[in-house]
Length: 55
Image (tube, rainbow, N blue to C red):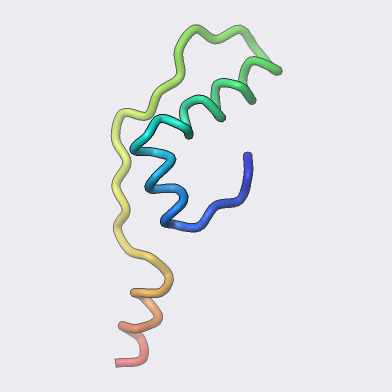
């Protein structure tokens, strides 16, 4: 799996690119039929947390 920023992760999760990457990695280990994210919830980013700590 490549390292991603929060923005890259959000785009990948929305466009099913993340599902394809996970399925490709899993096929090397085991037989899988379907891989999919059901729900992704971003609570807070590190940048927002830094801003909150400085305030």
